[in-house]
Picture: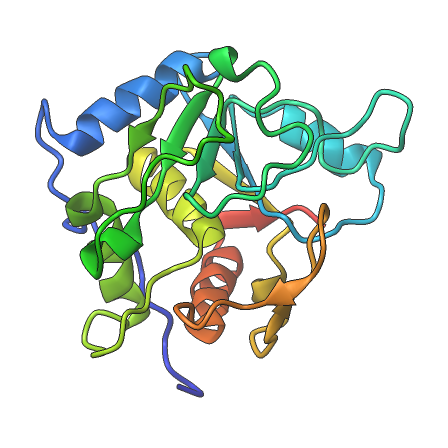
Amino acid sequence: MDGAVAPELGPAAVVDAPGSAVDVMRGLLRAYAARPDVRSIAVVGNAPLEPSDDRAAAIDGCDLVIRCNSFVLDERDGPAAVGGRVDVVVFNRLLYAAPRVFDSYRDRLYLMVEPGALHRNADRRPPRWPADLGHLVVPNREITLPLSEALGLASQDEPVWATTGLMSVWIAALLFPDAELNLAGFSMIEDRTQVEWTHAWGDSCRVGREHRIEPEGRLLASWVSSGRAVLLR
């Protein structure tokens, strides 16, 4: 893969007709954004970040803030690092719920990714979730499969798919192609050979065998270098 050009997001990557799943998702994200004319988006991954007032302010200042899985928020009596806003949560069934994941859940949009459903039956709803948690399942045909194509994973025989973090970025870029895209907490951009994740909350763990970090890092790095995305350091 050395020297290969990272795939770009093309206009034909998804079916986007009025009433399509993508159109419905876009409308929902607009409803939860600070304003419906989404011009700036922050997507925050779960890698640990050093304190930064500027980064935290940049994240919270976006029209739409997306976080994923076991995310953390800045505490009022602690240092600023990742901000305190969250409009959309992208998660999966194996979510380890950090202390703030379900806070004020009625005021957020929850998007559940299920790429594993392409390879096996979906698991039951985890009993630890709030009983009335409303969520939208991210459609695999319109979202997951085009991303797998872009990463070069679609032709592999074994079950592989993108991380929830990258899917969060992909959703933001796909639904709002003209919006400014700000990224923070994505360690695969600078470390594409890692075999273990370190998280801002919870224990470290091995990268799942279903993920391929190298092409994910190349894709995000290409967006940063081309100006499609801004990396908030």
